[in-house]
Image (tube, rainbow, N blue to C red):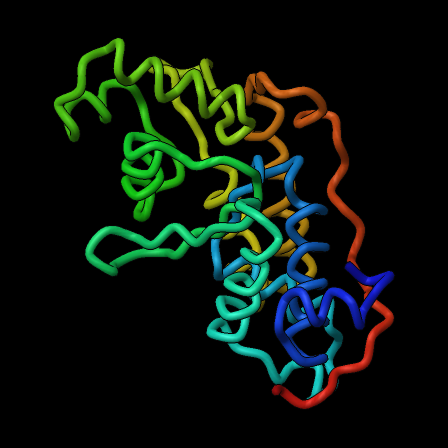
Length: 221
């Protein structure tokens, strides 16, 4: 995207502001995909994009609506980006940055995690009245795609959705002191190490470096 600005601006049908915002969205999604499987909450994406843009007033002049508009324009490149809306409009909006469509069952599971970041088979069985085969099929697919972490150290196996797990860290970390950050990182590292992850590189891949794009920030148009 960044190498042929004029061409891609024409393909996406946007001006400089939304073109550069789209590039930053892609960069964040690529950098975090090994951690969240390619699904990130709008809240986390928004905060990470703002961090990447710098602290100047013009750089921070971006809203969640701008993010959604830029993602809508990215759909012109194919089905790699999609917006997953919460049921009844209540809860967190999720951004899918991996090709392919999630099934209704996968979306239902993601929406069930609006108030928690993990679930068990028993919880899904009680909430949705699904058969064990249906639950297993949905979970196996999400594990294969890298969307879930597994913690089998408790009484019941718990499945964590890192796309919401990391969002809580980013949002909570906005006002943390350095000591609080250290304590929080140790806590989540302990959970990370307990998780049995069935995706290549997900456990051993280090956190992505801060993204510092060398771009200017034109007015919206």
